Image (cartoon, rainbow, N blue to C red; front, side, top):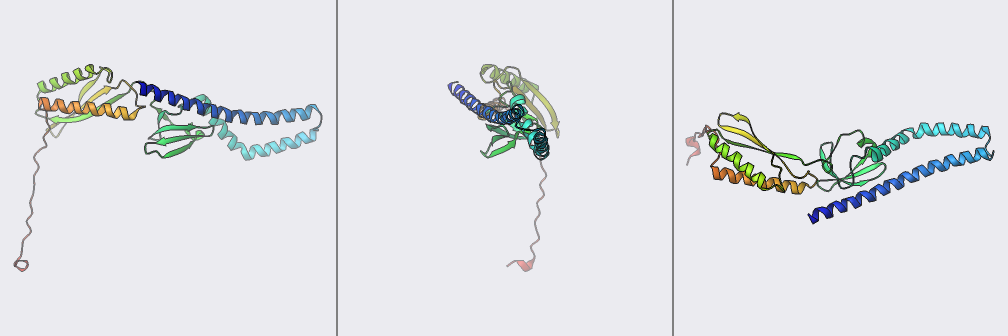
Length: 254
């Protein structure tokens, strides 16, 4: 628990630091715009700038808008994404374009992600605003599943005992699993095995993916133990084997 609290506090500190950095960048941008506006108003009030000068400045602004219009649009979309949409914070585990990544750094224009192999990936925020983003950290307790096959000859009594053992195991570990679960029969394959699936819910989301995998591994090993205790197995159908003996001619024999 202490390690979890430490990690959350560390992630919060990084998030606050990056938020302050983004706010400072936005503050510089807004300050620059305000300085230009105040300067123009000052020229008007002091009558230093004539109408002709203002017309000249306006024409230059139109040219600048034509040249930098797309850049301004990109900056505006990035600001909306970071401060209004705000789908993640630093340290959150997210999925973008089907790739699972950790948010490493957030800026006004770009976000830096750290992939599972520690490769850094830079995404423009204007591009991220158009993509669906999955956030594990903000998700509630998440569900999981394990699929397995048992022999077609497995009796109803064995399946009932398996259900009971799984139920007792989940209820015995409330710190790891929610008691609600589902053991379903998916299909019968080749009339020799029954394909089943166990669906269950962790008492956590998948932000800490290592812990999620550890818990799931323990559950799978418990299933293995239940199969051994109940003598539940899965046998493959007999396979025909054709042996081919090439003829050995007398010319190749000694």
